[in-house]
Amino acid sequence: MSSSSHSQNSDSAGPIGRPVRRDARRNRDKLIAVAQAAFAQAEGPVSLEGIARQAGVGIGTLYRHFPTREDLVDAVYASELDAVTASVPDLLDQHPADIALRAWIGRYATFVATKRGMMDTLRTAFASGRIAAPSRERVTAPIATILDRGAATGTLRTDIDPDDITTLLIGVFAAIIDGASQERTDRLLDLLLDAVRPKGKARTGV
Image 1 (spheres, helix red, strand yellow):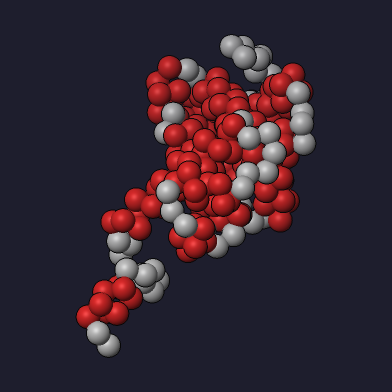
Image 2: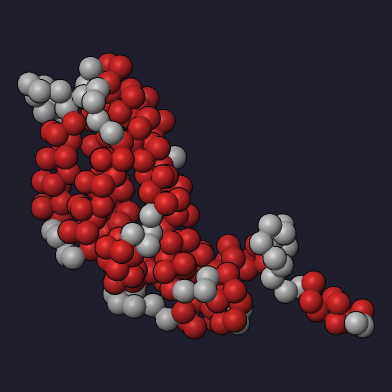
């Protein structure tokens, strides 16, 4: 094998477990950033070819990083979810746990509602469980943090499984994706919060 051929091969995607090259990481991050903007602005399906073109890479590069549209959607969803989940400590510093939970699930619902160009893919992915493990865990972990604080302070029930809250949220998000109004979304989120408050605790601050 010639040195030029060897160099060409070393630039291709390596086997699983090999550290991602710096330029490959840059391409991946650029594709996610472009896709985030495209999905937020679009009223309908977004062209993957258009995303690749705006990111300055070929469609083959996009497919190497994201073999399916669902893979790209999941990456965008997970990236933006990081910002949502990072808000939990500040919310708990500013509010009692029950109010913090309502604020957090409201922010998450807003995050889902802005994914207009991802709607069809999200609907299918949520229904099939395609978007599940890593993203679901990133939702459940902050919920667990808030529930622990609420259980310790008496503002939330002590017998709630955090993953049950995630499951209920996915149901609300399915309604959002299907076009639920803001009024109905708020009503569903308020019902969810009422379900995790101790019996007899009045609703305040929401």
